[in-house]
Amino acid sequence: MVNNLIEISDLYKIYPISEEISVHALQGVSLSIKRGEFVSIMGASGSGKSTFMNILGFLDTPTTGRYVLDGIDGSTLNYDEKAEIRNRKIGFVFQGFNLLSRTSAIENVELPLLYMGGITTREMKDKARKYLGMIGLAGREHHHPSELSGGEQQRVAIARALVNEPAIIFADEPTGNLDTKNTEDIMNLFTSLNHDLGITIILVTHEPEVAEYTRRKVIFRDGHIIEDSPVKKRKKAGMKKR
Amino acid sequence: MNFKNLFVTALRALNRNKMRSALTSIGIIIGVSSVIMMIGIGNSARIAVREKIFTYGANAMSVYDSKKPLTLRDVENIDRLLPQIRYISPFVYKSYILTKGGGQFIYSRLYGVNNDFFKIKSWPLMNGRYFTEREIAASEKVVIIGNSVRTELFGYTNPVGEVLNVDGLPFKIVGLLTEMGQALSGRDFDNVLIVPHTTAAMKIMGKRTFDEIYVSTYSETEIDETVDKLKEYFRRTHAIPPGKINDFKIKTSKEKLQMVKYISNTLSILLAGIASISLFVGGVGIMNIMLVSVSERTREIGIRMAIGAKKRDILTQFLIESVTLSGAGGIVGMLLGLGVYYLIIFFVDWPFIFSFFSIIVAFFFSCAVGIFFGYYPARKAADLKPIEALRYE
Image (cartoon, rainbow over the protein chains, first blue to last red):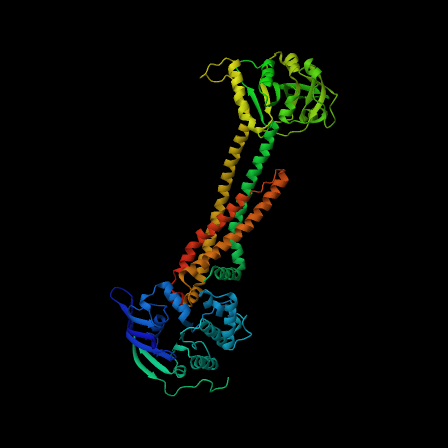
């Protein structure tokens, strides 16, 4: 029985710049995350938090160290196997939304299912529609990203992250491009996804207010974790009326 | 990701850049249409020339260039010995004969033949009649004229019954040949006077021997056998010992056909070769646009990879895009090529030959161009690293 969804021990990431100089982005990071947790990762830019997230999301490989996601050891996987893990177990939400332009909301949400296989076009549409409805964009399925507000675009991105029913969602500065109102909405949405659906969420942010929505705060500095603590005065989802 | 989804994805991508997609395909359209057109015109030319050669005579052959004289006895013997022979005619000719009539004159070729000659050559009459047995037997001065002789001397009136002065002798015109047109060499088939071989021998040439003997068989399959039999006959009568070469020659319409076929094939290959250069240029155009497209869509590729596209998915998607461009270009080019080909054929009055084979080849070739020139850009897309592609601005 795997208790921890994520198990990281002694992770290093070193970028060689030249023969003498190299950048040590991560220097021996260890961390465990259980199922159902809602974790924020904080740190100044250059602290290693983005590198860390990329490795967690199987978008990058550590130089050394062990990373196990849901019982799967990342070091044993080849490129395509990692793509498959990303497809089946992980949902991504990015700062810049990263939706396909000139592509309707529903087509954007369907995208992970396209690469999944063994699913009919009808099922794809149904699922995409279901998740668009869940994040509150029912009726706007055929709008293109350019016709949606920033907050709405991020919702589409969240629906896309949810559609493959992942074990975990990685959100990299999801509110970085949003105003206060939309930030609150998106964070409330994350909170309820975590609380109501039990989805594990790891969120990178540099805004302390955003981190306060989460239940656990991990702070990076210079490639090390310098703090790992529960969030005390937590903002509650749904406290503010939308 | 299954093929259908990849295909839909690729089509959507192309649809987003309609104008660019159309322009990119133009290279292939021009390439394929010119290949189709060239091959079509080549085929039609071959048939057109083939029909001309059949005016030389279907299943026809002739014995000529004999060192020993060809005589009426030879004609009679061959006719008796070879049952597969349908028509046989002696043939004498003289060129540059001064011909006067209707106050005009013309220099023509004169043939001395029997009535079978018209059957061998498939030369029908437009007006009048063939020779009578009596006219041939009595070496009468009667003539059947070609259309050019008529138009030069009598204009467009019916010349049958008129008198023609041939080499100083008065001849009665009994028939007019249907117009045949020009040979590829430019020689005018219609500038011809045809008289009974007896008349030619007695009144004009002053000799009883023939220049050639024309023969035709019932069917094409009998040509080779007949040629062999004729060789056998003449070697025997000319008393040629075994091992010595023939002192006569035999030409058949088949040989001419083969030559024409060879020439037109060579021409077709040459033209198709030139046309395929434009296919190559079209392919380079596709590669160029696909490279632009890959770098433009780096971020899209990054997104697709992040959410689970495998290398193969990206590779296939871009390959499908380039093959769709070239394949669609191929289909449009095919239709355009056929259309232009049909138009050209219509105006020069050649037969339309629908070559299914060349269409299939052109289509698959254009798809192959898409794969060949699309592979490098697609590979480049598939080899992108997800994080770098995602960060790309």
